[in-house]
Picture (cartoon, rainbow over the protein chains, first blue to last red):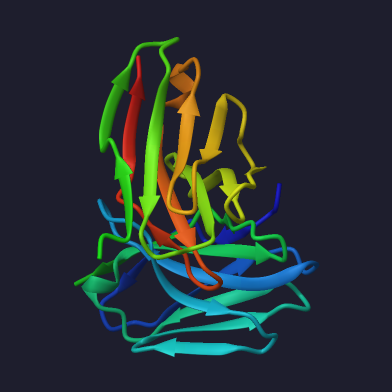
Length: 111
Length: 110
């Protein structure tokens, strides 16, 4: 079993505030680290796939960083909006095609 | 472009019954996956198939079998359903980068 851990499990953010949360994963056999956004009653959709140590990706107000040596990634949301409310999943992709997810961080943005 | 299609969307089974969940993708992806989603546990990998003709166990394979029928289709079979298998099941596929998910199958075993 691959230990992919996300923290916190949930967080509440005031509209306009920025926030961040963590994904930790095994630092050996690294191929890629994925972030997905999962809205209630929908399917997960990819935000980022990062492959290189030091990678930084950005999509609008959401960005992510990657540290493969120490086995963690941060997802940042700048100026949170109600539409950012969702569960954010990270997934560890080692070199053998396996794709293992963490339990997710559920973000609720209060207007 | 249908993407990843799962059938059925909903199913209720009695304990001990068997059924097969179907998944098909039209994106010419090599890898396909089956996950189950339970409250507070994210997505747990049941089985995956790196390419046509190969399948491997994931984190929670007990009670399930899979078949990679061809490049498009990857089915999940419950031989003797148990209440612990009540869950939402997601199929996913990918080529080399991000995964694309089906809409999910909500399975209840009573």
